[in-house]
Image 1 (cartoon, rainbow, N blue to C red):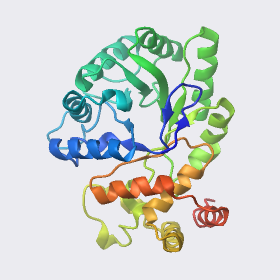
Image 2 (image 1 turned 120 degrees about the vertical axis):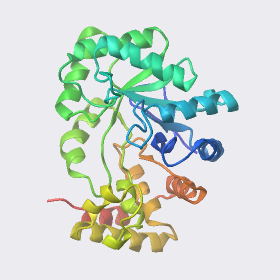
Image 3 (image 1 turned 45 degrees about the vertical axis):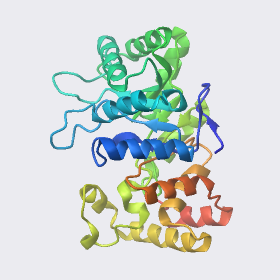
Length: 316
């Protein structure tokens, strides 16, 4: 599988990043281990998680995904074969949140312990913390790089203006700058990224690993009527069941049939083909879904297919 450079860093990543939110949520330990083994065998070596995954699930308190990854690293001995990305900053309870320097150091130590590793390849601010000066956060990240605990830093859920400001501050301080952005972006959710963020990441030469790449499963074609809204993602999906959503599914169906592919493969291939996207994030909970992810990395859409998808998903 070919690789792409993440921003100005030395990280070479595959064209698709696996979303580790499923570990300890919709996949138990044994299923997670099988999926991780299968991922590496398929060449999908870039895995993104976060300290807060999956605090939202009943009975969980956060850290479940990192913990399972750590157990798998210890069991398999394959840590060096994975490009490991995780995040901090979301509310972990008991005041553990944000990007203050003292908490950044506390959070990385907790993640390293759960992950049973001595370094994180890509450490990301999960969300902006406007109560903490960017200088303080970037200085804290710089210390982690100096300590060898983090190789590259990135941002998630930042505005274009804050991303540009963070880059200017890093240059002024002479510290490592964010090399990647993790934004919400897919065929249905285009406007915010394309109008506010894409011009900035292209100007700064940043890598982009987009999340919700399949719109919580909507772009797989699994949800077409209100009767289909069942399972863990149903509440998130119902917002897509509108006229524009149906037009997007029709376009995906047409192109999928043409290439003997699935709607999910086409939706991911559209993202992979966009010049500003380094590696969209997508998850799988079965071998069939994993096969879809791998097939998407091999599906090269011709220009007329991309034009059709751009038209049916156009925003006003």
